[in-house]
Picture 1: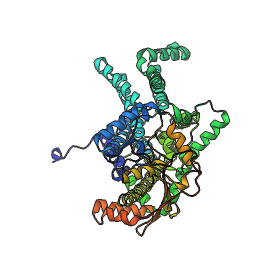
Picture 2: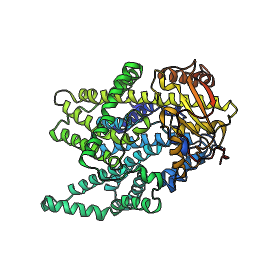
Picture 3: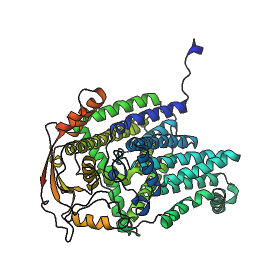
Picture 4: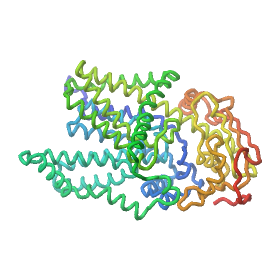
Amino acid sequence: MSSLSPPSLSPSLRAITILIVVLLFAHAPMLLNDGLFMDDWLVLKPRPDYFVDIDFLLNGAGHPIFYSYDTFANWTGVPVVAMVSLALAGIVFGAVCLMSTATRLDLLDRAEAVGFALIVWTYPGYQLWAGKANAVYVFSFGLLFVGAWLLTLAFSAVGLRRMLLRVLASLVFLLSFALNSTIVLYAIVMFGLFVAIWRSGDAAHGFVRRTWFAAWRCVLRYPELVVLPLVYWGTLNIGFKRIGVYAQHYNAHFPTLGELVRGWSAFFLTGYRDVLAHAIRAAIQVPALFIAAAVLVGIVLLLLRPDTKSTASRSAITTPLALAVVLFLALSSPYLIAGLRPSSTHFYESRHLLMLGVPLALTLLAFKRLAERWTHPGAAFAAIFGAGLIVSIGMLWSDYVFMQARTLKQQALARDLAGRVQPAATVYALDDGFFDYPSRHVPFGLAEVTGVLRLAWGNQPFFGFALRAERPDVLRRMDEARRAPGSAFHHFDPTGPQATISLQPGPGAAPNHVLVRKYYACRLLARCDVAELLAQLAEVTIKLGPIAGLLPLDGASKSVTPGR
């Protein structure tokens, strides 16, 4: 009878299957979120007749790879689907290659590798997982690990296979540089390559000579990988140089020690302390999300069967902990050099934190191995990685709920405006009443408000902004920005007639988690109509006339110019 039993999965395939299934569960809300956020409105077309001018990515912002992805997404006619697919591909392939590389190099056992990859790819400090244009960030991050896996295969390959793997790895690494800060992780990969060559050297040469030979052989054997970041940066600075507002935005300089310390402190507080504090509050307010996360993690622990062999040696504990500190400092440094810092209060300002899941995973790995000194390895894994994953996935879902609720509020506004005759105005201030509603909300950005106006009333030179998000000189600043070379705002016109839109919670308004639960019930279970849900969500009124509290735009024309 045993010969008739279905074959069981190999341990490696079993671990990969568990990893993929958990990641798909963790990021499932991304599949239902078809909204655009912040700068998404500047580069993606929510419908075929919606006008976007993404030349600024080439001729202003210096992002040719971003330009290629966004152009392709718009060409498909379903850019939201294209970008969601891109993000999910980055998450899945990046996680699988990270796990495979770590186990192939015997750095982690299978359970550790799965737990490590899950922490990296569910890190909730990065709140923009549902962002569409920022899917390029996620995909680029994933490509870095795909490249590392290909390089690992190439290291032990020979002949034509070795050459093809190296060419493919170089191409993948090059595309991963679309997220510029991945070059820091690329440097870590190259250091790992150097260590591998160093270990294969002759120990009789002595440390200094052996190190010199290893460095020289690394350059001679892999010249394409050594020059790759230089070629990339040279191409950007020569062919796609940043100009105008983008040259000013990246305030590149050598920070002082005090600036570095303050910057690193901001990254630590935003990337870790605030995440934990927000998770505690979210668990108190919406415990169901964290209970569901605990059930999912419990199933993972039962299926994964952590290794019973202890890895609690001193070096096995100190090495990942030291590497976590080094990586944290290194990954945040490019942003500090550019004068940028993250914020946990605005989801868009978390975009600098995507890769900080790696130092977190290394720290948990060190703590897990330390706990093995006092308990069974399986118990240590469950206590450290299990608890970490519950917090991470629970908070990740909480952020997805927030982003979905934001999408619904935008859609409610767009639906209401589309049902109206356009007033005689092209400059609109949004008085957003959801800011005072007792559920998390961030004022809409000017790209979001302007995008909703153009979605509702067509491709006209609208300029819209949220009153509470902008200063009184917003018209002047936008007029300067749209005239700057390489600007993304050439089709924004702050000189036209003005009006104020009042967006207030309607009879169907509810806290984010309740609202999103109703939306899921409508969309997945057909228990209600989504259009009716949106109609009840908000009440919209429009008042024509000058916007109160704004500084006038001196010398600007008051006529309405035709849209492009």
